[in-house]
Length: 189
Image 1 (spheres, helix red, strand yellow):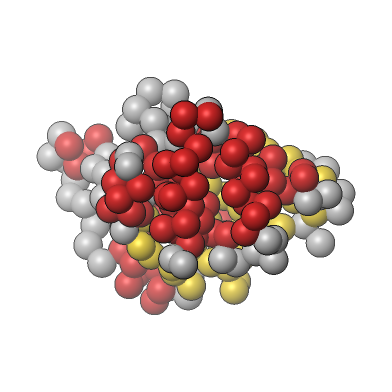
Image 2 (tube, one colour):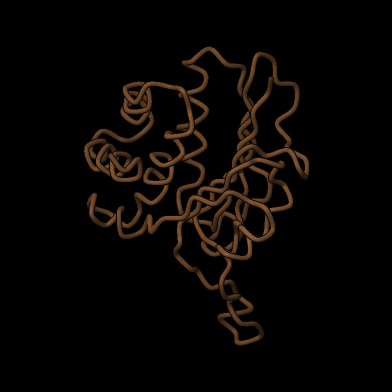
């Protein structure tokens, strides 16, 4: 059975490293894996969506609406924006940080309130945490992506050592210790 994970965020937040890490881990676990960056704006501030699909045999990297088992989001508004992709019984793992999109910055719109509650009211199971504070505790605000991977790892039947090994293999050596700490803080153990 194929499982589907959407990683959504804003350009410059490290969603590509998160999807690379996840893809690497799942390949080492023997799954067929397809990873695809869908809407990417390489400059900071643009919405970035990455699909990670894995299972015995995966034919397409694309996740359709109502098919995502997990949405991992770097920011609340991005989670809400892609909620229609979540399957019934799916889970949203979200950083509670708010990053104002351009319409809010220019004053044309207001950042929506109570997004976590609205997503839960709409039927989503939401695991929300302040990943930015945890990343800073680990040593860098840029480690939000690995904090999120730590949190996501709680929902997988893959030993923690395998996750840690994947971090060591995907992250530049000088950042391994910091990222292992961020993973641990995200996992909450």
